[in-house]
Image (cartoon, rainbow over all chains, first blue to last red; front, side, top):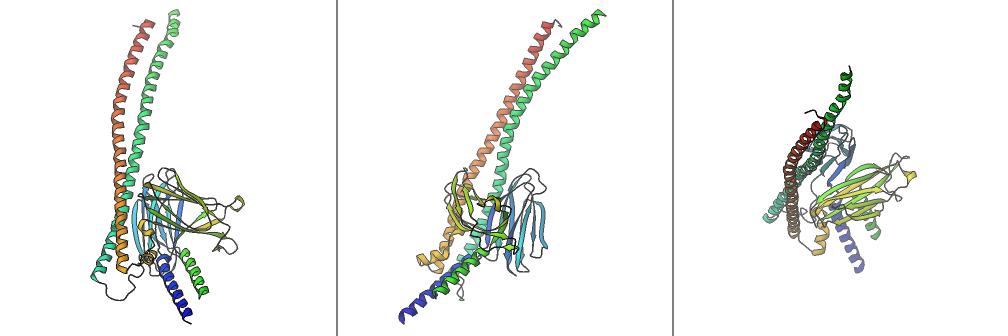
Length: 221
Length: 216
């Protein structure tokens, strides 16, 4: 009898732990990634959002061409809720009106040669709470409130860092490009100068060698 | 009770993998994601693949036949992970060099299968987001506040790593700019020399040519 109660208790505990783990795992629905958008292509990403959940969408192009991309967000009915053309960086916060699959598409159809590197941050709902924290109904102590405030602050710092890292990546990639171009262009120009110099001489020599037989011709006349 | 527990576990697994971002690829397509991370940072990738089922016009929740080839390359283009996983997987790796890590996925489907659509659920967590705090709390018996402080510490550590990486990248950026600067300077000097030499050679050549032809 005792054994069975204990068994039930441990099982209950396990279930609770599992539930807590699930609460954390289930929708840790914030995903940040960077992908390569091929030229002339359109890539779409889908996310299921429940009704009245707020979502935050942010993108930034970090390399390729004029650093621009076409972006649009569609709701489950296919209605466009957000649209930008040829944009480099923007963010959009919205609240889902219906439950369903929201679509975010990135288009690069206008660009025939350059592929783009696009960073996407798609956060759905609030950040999942730490297990144990925020579950009790009592008023938070000052320590807890300030630790939460610090947590928010650090999150903002991390976001700002990501933003600056991408800006720096833009600048760095451009600089590396420029370096390469200076190198290639100077080599080409040197080759061009030498080639033009030699051709000039050849053409001039040709003028004078051609004249001789014609002069002889005139002489005979 | 045990059965119930297993049922719940399975249900939660299903729930977990069903949520999150997904996209479509064709079976032979290759999809790559780039994660720019500092060194000694853990990256966790969770994915689940579903095969398009033409009969029901939907996606099969489980497709045991499909395997995914996952390849991770670091900033020096060195392969740090290359394996075939099943239709559902969890990949975890730690970066040893800072820089862009490319995670590529493609299915191991055979040719007569190709053309079908695959739906890939993907979740990428980097750095302190990859830490499972429920696990930490259980293992180390931390109170709520201790756990919160632990999270703050992890975040601060991540920020420090990021700043070190920032310093490294700034160094690279400056190096590139200085290289461009010196290239511009040296090439303009070299080009002037080339122009002068060219002009000198042209004049000398023409002079000797005209003298030989007795035009002057």
